[in-house]
Length: 288
Image 1 (cartoon, rainbow, N blue to C red):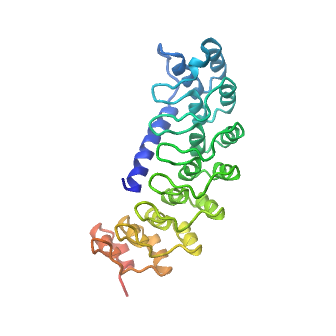
Image 2 (image 1 turned 135 degrees about the horizontal axis):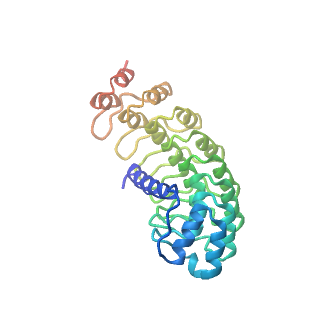
Image 3 (image 1 turned 120 degrees about the vertical axis):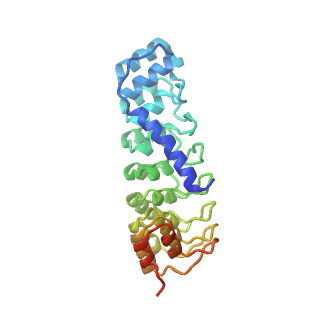
């Protein structure tokens, strides 16, 4: 699977999860204790959480129909007090939730629930635990653009060099999300600017694709190869051109990117600009 495809699928799954978390309270159907506890945690009903735990005990700490426990929902929705109650009751802080395999810490980091991130770390959550894509909470914070959560994770030993199943680092995800603040934070803490993914792409490829000129300039200033070639023969300039990123193209050309380089199909960046109707970009890419 190409990195961009994997990223899109993961983002789609997350979007569905967040939409559910944002739903208004609904009348509770007859269901088991775990479902009731998950709903109460999601909606912030701490008294009901205590009542369900008292009546049902450990049975209520299991997963709901989505594969998430009440601790996952409390982490996702930023319910710090409920999280503490659940942990005191024996909730599994390392539980993998849903098809994605997110831990509670992954979800808190992704949403920037800084107080929950701190609480989970203080209670022993695995700062470098991996989800179903082999991504860590540092990946999650980088993907979500959550600088404060990212800083907390790094302070507690979170690796800025961790690679997921596609060999994407947190910096790759920050660049693909155009997360300039988290990207800078990662670089400041030693994230490798030349890391190469399974598809041969560097963070600079991702920043060009996303059109994030701030990150493009930062990466190049830290030694990123401006004409790095991925597995399809594409440079960052070629990747950006496919998406019509005019400002990114200008930044790369100013840094010495080769506009005449051809990818595995034999096309140049200007060829792609003309192919997709990016006429202004094609003018920028004309070789003089």
